Length: 419
View 1 (cartoon, rainbow, N blue to C red):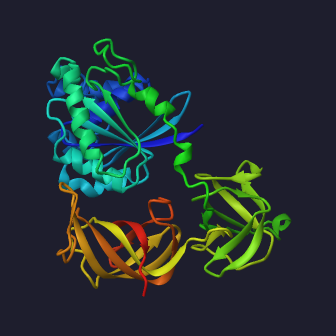
View 2: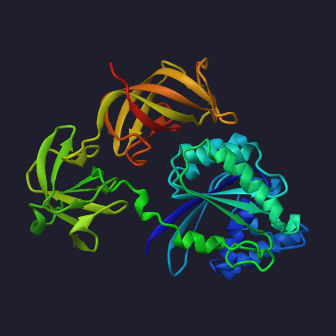
């Protein structure tokens, strides 16, 4: 069954957690004891209705303040598809949490309060979603019950957001009017908005096409683990396990192993359920090679027709995720790219992004917590990558503070810098 990952983003109090609660409840994806617990909590708080946001807002601080702070993941499925939901915070100070939750999403739900229209945080999260390369955006114009389900209110939000989205690199935007609190157009179509002839949210999530979002042309396979069974009957078995990051691999294909450049062919592709003829993203498989070549964790098996970029001096967008110290030229960090780890030094901060205006401040000399900028890095070992716009798997990286082992930055590679 196909898996769809989606994130809910948007401004504070636009109803992200309530929408997820409604989606889970109406699709019968919560247990009776969960319902009893949130019903009891809602009564204790003196609320007139069962607060479905409590299904995702699990931290005490979240419940006390009525906001989402950390990313909450929820899982459910329908007969057509499996889903992983990332409920992300709306506050600007939790931008790093939003980036983390949305980084692996196939689709983003951008909630907008029909009364407020497109506010600063709506634009901020829409831009970050576009920057992260999320292929599909669904603009949920929420709280339609508070504007009497008027079509004009929906059209005003749709037109305002469309004007902003035209400046972004977004190819698929869908607009759905709804009331998460009342359940209108979440799982079932609403009789209160006969003027809307589109699909309700769940049907759209079940049917949106995501298979073609992966790079199926350029074959990329970062090696995560070398498998050498200890049992006597498998004494000559050597396989390379990992997750396909691009292209389609088949038995008999000619491949190259980076960084060594050794050429060989694939002899077999194994899975937990047995051998397969072909492997494509996002399958996790074990590849066996025809020749005994030197392959280890962090290497990459690629197709011979179009190799990845190989460079030690690179440029990319970085979201800085710590308040311990700013990101400045000269900062030394560990870098994790696919399954490959190395060390890196920041050689320059070329600009800091002003998200609200989409302008770049080229006078910036560093990045503080939650800021995004264009940064240049020099690594101790070559990175084998594709620009992020071409492949989100091989074009992304994280930066790690070696002293604390904390992840302090998330980045998207733009390209190599010529020496």
